[in-house]
Amino acid sequence: MVNIAVLVSGGGTNLQALLDAEKAGKIAGGCITTVISSSPKAYALERARQNGVETAVLRRGDYATQGEFDDAMIEALKSREIGLVVLAGFLCILGQKVTDAFSRRIINVHPSLIPSFCGKGFYGLHVHEAALAYGVKVTGATVHFVNEIPDGGEIILQKAVYVEPGDTPETLQRRVMEQAEWEILPRAVSLFCEGRL
Image (cartoon, rainbow, N blue to C red; front, side):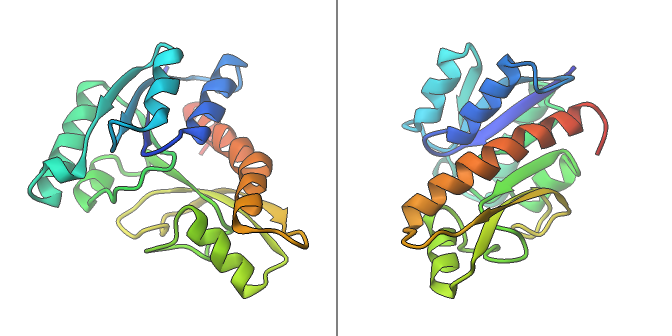
């Protein structure tokens, strides 16, 4: 059984999708054992508590350097025997020390079809604002391995979502979550835990 840590910063909608998938038996060979938040106020922590999952808070601002933050993250993950780290709306950059320590064991969900609208500065609503400003007719979500380059790791799964007339960044964000992120993230986690990636 693979111990899974989910790293969050906000409301935790992708975390909820993972918790629901686990309850439904859709994550074979894995168990969400820890939720780590970069903010003590993140609602995702409450979602974790409601589901009996251990929580921890690691704030980047509590550490003088990126290296110290990375060391604390590595310790938090290794002490809990984490086999897979899932970034689900985690707004802190993990340094190369972490990505090397958990090479091919960290995955992220990104709300576009990488390589479009990704990399530094592309997160949350910014991604959907950029997609609408560019005029794309199709967007979607990507689950990928995490390396030292933001959104630069190997792609695991993608799913396309059509942009509809009159879409706002908010309506597009919601549809991409519902139709793509909440579907492919649990599937990718299960594939990893089954040893199929």
